[in-house]
Length: 225
Length: 305
Image (cartoon, rainbow over all chains, first blue to last red; front, side, top):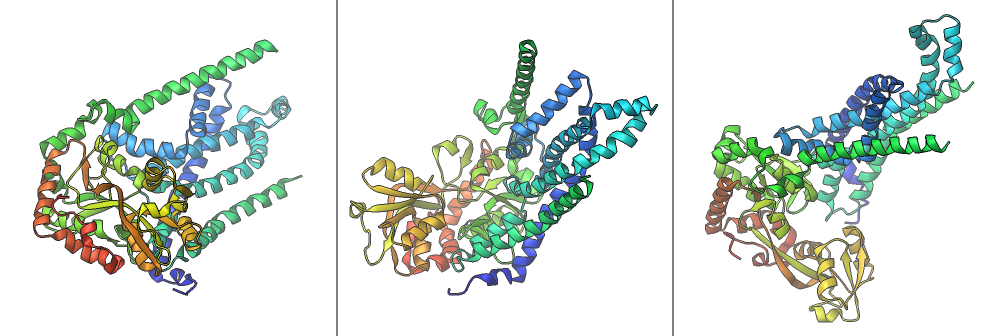
């Protein structure tokens, strides 16, 4: 009873389960981030259109993910689709779909913002020099837009990694849920378990997210000229 | 200037209304409540799943070769995971026996780990066949799921220091009672004994810390939980063991799945005859509760209270 409770982290079984949970966290985060970047760029470029109807639809999609909490989307797809269509989607699949859809919306808006933030005279000057539309994008717009896109995109990636903790509600056992299970198992005989487990998970999230933010900072500094 | 402003506002309004429309459509076919309230027998949307059920829910389960059972993963000693990550606990012991009697093999089961708040949703969306997750029977829940016979009963209790025990609610006069926000204990004392001053905490761990710090004369919570806690913490006693409405805990099936429900009730009656719930108590609860708890305060055999 008088131990510090640290031994909860020394148990091989606990470590193995936490690492399995981390694997699930990473699986959801990485797959969705990759899909989001790819689809987000396409979606963002579509959003720069001058066609009002197309823009309106894109905007609606984006706002749908901004206004409705991610948790509600998860429920809607996991329970709602089962009730409505009798489909039986796996919780992990639902998580990847929802996170990809959300990521695409946010990533797209970042791309749109980056492209539109390039002053109009850049485009006009390029056109005046006789560059074709595709060349204008290739040589003038995209190189400048990427610099504005990266910091915000990386910020979104870290946000997505952290938000994966919501997937417990659709039955997915990721790292935070494993932690909770271990804490509850130890609650009576090792009340300090919660401190060590949460500290460990905190460090894991930090190790995941900090280098990404650091990388973004460095890029920003490098491009600041 | 004003014209563009108005135009902008109009556009925003159009956007919003389109959005609301979309959501209504989505929720109309998606939200769990919309469906079940409209038609408890399973509306047109659920026809497919329902047809399978009426055809023989048990035959369907046997075809699948496994029973999908919703259990808790973090509520010791009722449903939790041991060191190796295996499902254990009081609920699981009983559920395993049920699976064995239904499919002939206690490992023919898929444990689906649920949270308190989504147990009803799992059943309604047909993601599990059975909920065995310390499911307290309430009238609201009974409208959305079908409860089988109970296997356990709970009431509120009050734990207090042995040095100044609270053996009756009247002992609490002029003293402060610790409760956890959002629990049945909070509602019960607020409604029934409005004169007793309550100290409210958000989390269980905080509340117990407050009790050990001597900030209140006692702490009210589900009696089962208190028995376990008092047993692990010398110097404290559950002076008031049973208070308020006695709630029962029962397994539940999807609303309208009468075949499985009837089979389960019959099974629980058979288990009652061989006093199996007592065996489950000895296996899963006795090590935690020790001698301080009388099994008869908890166990329900064959659904007979």
